[in-house]
Image (cartoon, rainbow, N blue to C red; front, side, top):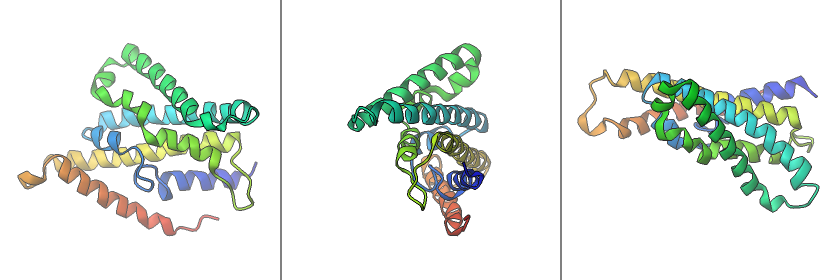
Length: 201
């Protein structure tokens, strides 16, 4: 395994092809949970955990069940079932051990189940190929899931920090709430667009 591949995956997932700011996946929790920094960090940690575990489990299911039995058409259903199970596990864990964070995340925690960023990383792990035509191996898929979650968390924390500052700013009444959140997220996405010209290989 080439260590440089892991560096490329990390830089790409966090900065260049950020799931929220580059691929525009997972916008619902991004806008909904980014009002407070504490809940943004908690949601980010939950997404990192789910993305990493989902990448590991879905890669294994694809390679040892779907591909050998030629039932790749069940990929989406199988992956959604895996993600839903992982989210249910995290929800039960948080409810028991971190009740304040559980109540702060509210409806957005179960929404990880339908977070297209988590399903997106699982499918991209199977479909992504290097320049020589080889596909991601098990470690590269797990690493892509982890760094994809880190990129999601970076975007979420940046947005939460800015929105907390905007609470104290003198904003026109018509721009308060979602309008200023959408403008802010668009500006952050434009800033991240600057990474797309990076050459990392």
